Image 1 (tube, one colour):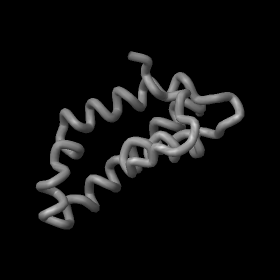
Image 2: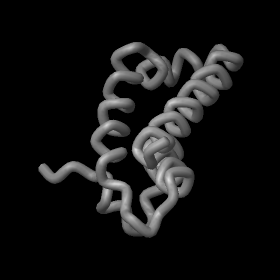
Image 3: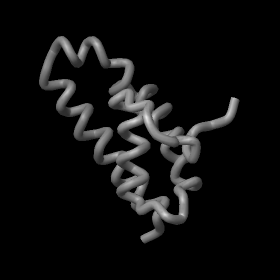
Image 4: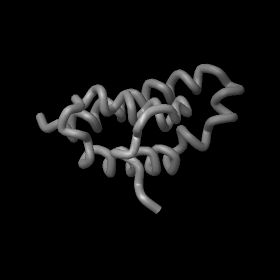
Length: 88
């Protein structure tokens, strides 16, 4: 299995697990429904598709998925995340 595909499978699984957890708390589900909606999932996975083709050679798929997911979902803006960011 290719590294990009491994990355996408891990990211998608993390996204779905987080969405399920968010729906267990009604207040959190309402507050974050823009993230777990179909359009929110589409935007997130579109970014993941972009990132999957740019994983650094020295980074495993799981390391890349963790860094990508943490940046997007946990608001972890520390470190050097240039590899998956789109230029404006």
